[in-house]
Image (cartoon, rainbow, N blue to C red; front, top):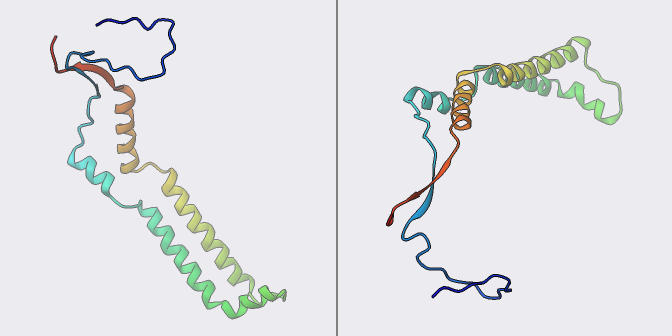
Length: 136
């Protein structure tokens, strides 16, 4: 039963049977063949510089906590009792920690290189749609 719906306003859904004759549309994309070495690179933890930055910053925080009695007056609008050497140690340690984090973030490592390879693969292998199954 063939009906024409041209120029008509539809108020109900129209069920169309056997439109693709049992076929369906699938989207395919070539897979990235992940090797065990690539997997281990991706599974690996942070870069060594991030670990080093955490260690340095933890040391700075520990040092600052030990100077608590000298730092406390600053919160009561009194003059700081920190010596310039103590203040320099805190500032230099914080800057060194931030520098280690930045180096780890921008310096290419195995994990970043592997992720770029995977990204490049999927950029150059776009997905495509295909009819599968059913009658020809």
